[in-house]
Image 1 (spheres, rainbow, N blue to C red):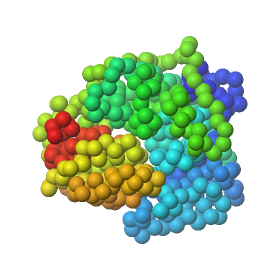
Image 2: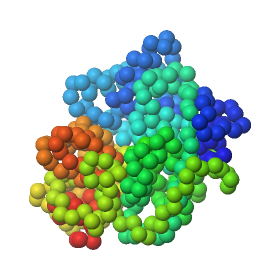
Image 3: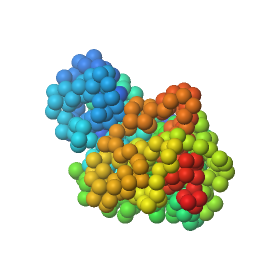
Length: 417
């Protein structure tokens, strides 16, 4: 079996499962945010169960429109807050202690290898970087998960992605996943598990691995997953709140397809509007002026991303016609960036630095675009109207290209500096 099939089999109480099989699965973590949880709470109450299945395993993080954007956002957050207190939830993260959910949960040790995690947010697949089966669900499924601690799934087929060779300068996990999506398309892994492996993945930092798994959904995947290794264990062991089990794919596991990529030919990538698959290498971007740059989100708001950006911005100024917004993904990342002097570097360069929030990524607040404006962002989606006006444009990239572009006022490579 593949690692995905092994995890699902154990959680379904079966010796083995195969792709296409319908199974009932025990859940380790159920996650919700301020946009999706109010609907889930409504559904939960209709079920007629008074208490969640386990107050230690339901995690609520108000991160999308917080600090409260407007009255409606405040009302949604109030619903979360009241429910968390009524249910005695152990893991409710208020403003000031919260972070963007998919950076916060790994940091807090709440998602672990070998687990099954659902979240009412599509980028829940991020936790596959730890060797977990993690997937996004709708608010109705979240309600059922909170009530019963289980959910049905169809076992997804697995596509294997093998990366080999030597990474070029400034190429990170973001460039690998953008390149991959560019090759297979936004539906190239529809309802599949994307298993990422090979020597290149084995040498990636955890921050880059989270980025790779985070964007599996942008290829239509049910989940993304990376087998745990020593880098994973070094990250997880000091954080884990309970014991966990590591699973690995069998050598004779059945894969629907196998892709192999030599990364030595991969440059920093840029996804043009209006799909994450509309990818070009930085050398083919051309002259594209920009109005705004956003460095942050559950995709690239981690410490490694901020350090890359600071390395480029140090001693330089943000272009006079560009707004640079930098959003550390958690309070812990923000605090470490402060200790490392990164925040001062950003402010000195002319950037605005925000408390953790999803904010502009979904066109919520902290950087909404006007008609005709172009943004370059380290976020995960660039659909029409994603960050504001439907006649605005969003381009996607990694932190190095984002920082260099903020200085030059157009989409550019760090080499151009």
